[in-house]
Image 1 (tube, one colour):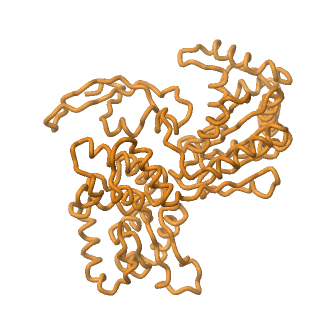
Image 2 (cartoon, helix red, strand yellow):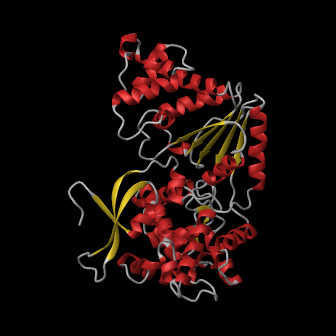
Image 3 (cartoon, one colour):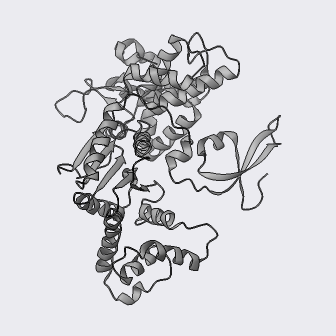
Length: 463
């Protein structure tokens, strides 16, 4: 179907990658083994969309609910930054909790104010690429086009830097960073000294930009930051205190940092949505579509307070309704198995589990078969893994936010039967569709049934 050196994707993949790429619609095509023609697209090239969040979620933002206090805090820090008292806000939270959404809301609130916006995005695919977020930001600021020649790029880049650069050496160092022709090698600097001067040049660019107007800097997904960018970010946090800049850094809780403790640094941990806020979000997403109270409550229960889950589950319900299914009576896994977990959430979850390794993934699957909550004793009997391996898997899942432990088994004074665990809805749902069709699922259920008579009630709480 695809030509040599070409990639063709189906509708399911198209929905997952959003606007990350540019495509050519191939229409409905015949595929061997499938009776009816299926829609397909050819992937052409990466898109020009700056933000991964915007590329995946689209231009229309999800309604923001339950974040009034957080937005108010950010606006107060912006007011202080504008007066010259630079501020840093550390926005942390689990995947899907709304870190990118809240920064987008802040940018929207400030769009009528005179200011400069600088955005940096980390990527799991560039954690070993030095200063990748800064290189990409400079490319966009200079206005590089795909078909620009090297000479055109260099001309644009010099035009960007020349008004504020402190000398030709600074421009040459930054040009070398961008893989553009430069005479940086002629400076005869040691690698350490060149690194120091390069970082200082990037810091100076931020300070120079803030001389004419306040600057909003958004640094997203810092949990994927490369080591050199991390060093520069550390220096930036210190430098920001003396210039009119608000630096907002988003990251997941697993990031270990030492950014707290300074008077100009404010931590902002995004918590799960309360039940009322979750219901309000469902109703706003549903718009004119009429969802029963039971359906709304079940979506909120399954989403467990995670805004992204609320959004995707609500969309799944609405799409099912559009196909003619009756949903007024409520959403249930038995009645609508295809809504056990939306494809977008499934792919994200599986990718996260894969990164944790096979042991953690297997433990998660065992837990998902047992139910939303289970005791350590029960999962130990079902998993049939050596205790060190089982605890390693539980530790990794807990650290990643995919499992919640009521009492940590890491405390040697606590007996192994004391801890109990609770899985987020999506982890549990991942096994829903496969209980009756996969040998692994059948084997797990066979292992569980003889044990169930001795399990505590809390071990069998399910969605």
